[in-house]
Image 1 (tube, rainbow, N blue to C red):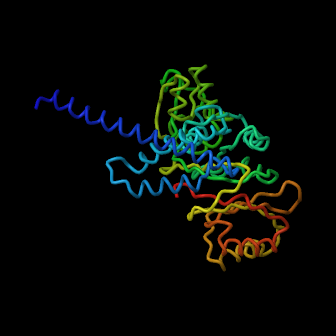
Image 2 (cartoon, one colour):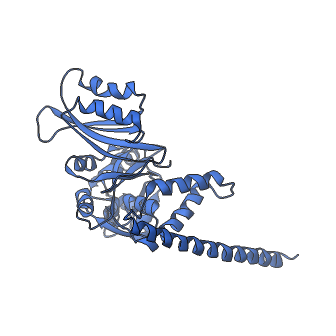
Image 3 (tube, rainbow, N blue to C red):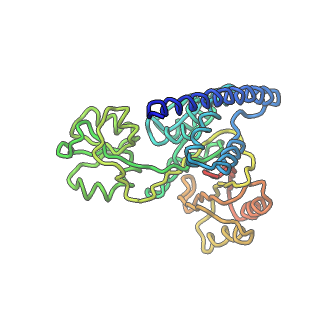
Length: 359
């Protein structure tokens, strides 16, 4: 068989499979519509993270290649997103503008069949959800290199919103500019977190450059598009949107540069079997205070994955602790540990129990 004939035969087989896949996707969508009707009748939520996480887990377990588990997840994320939009098109607020890493995390989590609404401040994302202008919000909370995003943690102190899910995303930072020429660069601009995450690389390669902070990586890219002497630390996606050239890729100092994002909403997520619970509480600064508050978790064999303290804004010498632990609040050992902790604190608030990222 000639190469051209062989190629034509292979393409014909692919076309045949594509037609079958399309019919099956359409059939799946018709069932999604019925699911939506059933949910509406029972006044149930359209987006159920534990259900979607279970779908990804089951499908990746069945995956025999050659597609990677990540590729399979991405494909079905868009199928699920499109199907979900037949029930209701979700409104998702995020820390913008477009092309920020938070925007990318929101699309990765909800798929592209949602209406994404950029906001300039984390407080504005919370406000959109609180006032029912958006179904959910997506905000960054911590980076493996740069640490916590204090603005997000502070918002939870007074907000009634809960954590509904989380997204963990590998962050690859690029240095981008209008001309792509190193000799033109006099000034480097970005959000404080990416600046912190690439501080070593920038110091080595651009020791004389002025470092300027701004509200987002996308805004940094926009500034760089107007001035050839300005470079931005941003994503490759932002470079494409703003017509910039990449000077260098992967400039982050850490080999594993991960950022965790939170999906915030007004409802509580159900148990998925592999969950995380977040809470905040206040304690007075006293000898042995930290030991006392950690003791209930040790006694219940609960793994604490994060603990962060910040001075309380309203009372002197009192601290707010943010804590993440394995398990769901409906788990008996978690519930009992939290009850014991309540007796040791002046204020405690469960921020949410939700499926772990990648679970």
